[in-house]
Length: 161
Image 1 (cartoon, one colour):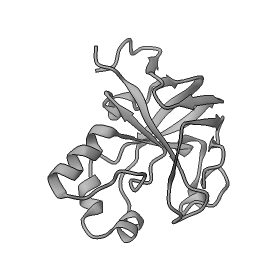
Image 2 (cartoon, rainbow, N blue to C red):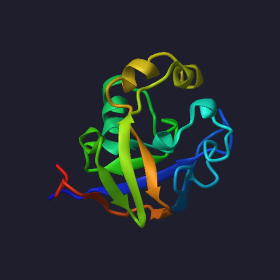
Image 3 (cartoon, rainbow, N blue to C red):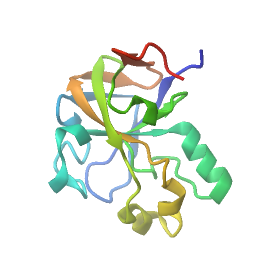
């Protein structure tokens, strides 16, 4: 079975500010990562923030494929997603629960790219992320996540692909 883990944690303190990496983070039920722009109500899309959009996740493998196919470098937090995962097809988790560290989350929906991201990073970003922008998740139980934590599906799913 492939290793499925949390590769990185990214937050920004305000809309448009550079993302910075954390070794570990505390996630609050219904609100996301403590200290992140959306937890603080200072994100670009904060007016539409709902519990089912508390945290965003993207696949490490998708970031690598985008770089290889288009030359667009979305590493170092330029992807503007909170959690980078490895070894899991995130769309397979939608509608289900999963655990990272001590946090229980529910994968609520895909996280499609937006034109705002393209304005920040340049032409081609929107298309490069189409169908691989990751997912959004709701925080069901508060807790701590850290880099290297396993991603464990909870409930009906017994294993990750």
